Image 1 (spheres, rainbow, N blue to C red):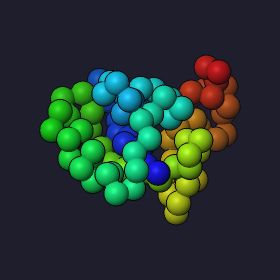
Image 2: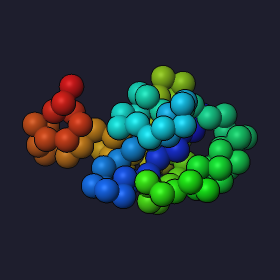
Image 3: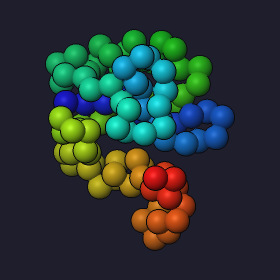
Length: 93
């Protein structure tokens, strides 16, 4: 499974493409994409990159946990700084 991620142009925050086609702040709200549909979905998302920079696909599990060789990097991107858990998205929850 995959999800589409990028960075918001207005403030640089990490965002994910949601089921409704809107950009979401949390990976839990991301639209799960079958592996074979990933490239087509990414191409469609790139056509409307007025709000987002650097779109790409990341591997996730069925329960939207980061997976694959970039799992650690993407886990940090989705939560926030590892040294200061009082900052970033993990502090909001």
